[in-house]
Image (cartoon, rainbow, N blue to C red; front, side, top):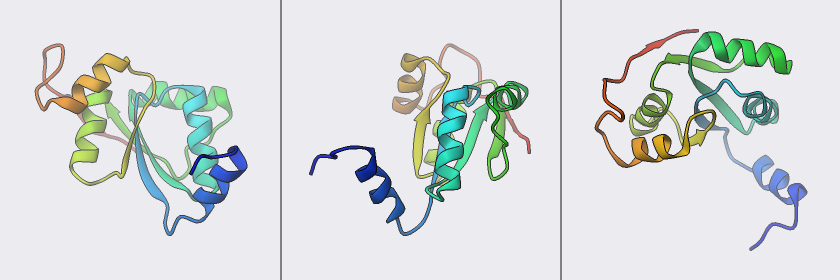
Length: 125
């Protein structure tokens, strides 16, 4: 059944039994943070943003988004870390943010490190 518009999408999302946990690879983008903030306020999602936390916080400040209710994960390999979070069952969905599409797709299709090097991540709040 096709969606007629955003009103239909919003109505369907409002009917969800529970918010979905979404993890974003490369969360330091204003539009990504604004969309997540709106979805969080509507109780559609529990957002996890992955990337350099200092960059995520700077982007949020510039976009006027508070990170209340967001989980922040500090990682150099945002795509790999986000994919790992989904594979571990800690998130229901993966969202591509400010990472290259080929890199994100490669991390989804393989468990090997991409572009060399190991996944280097550390949790931050």
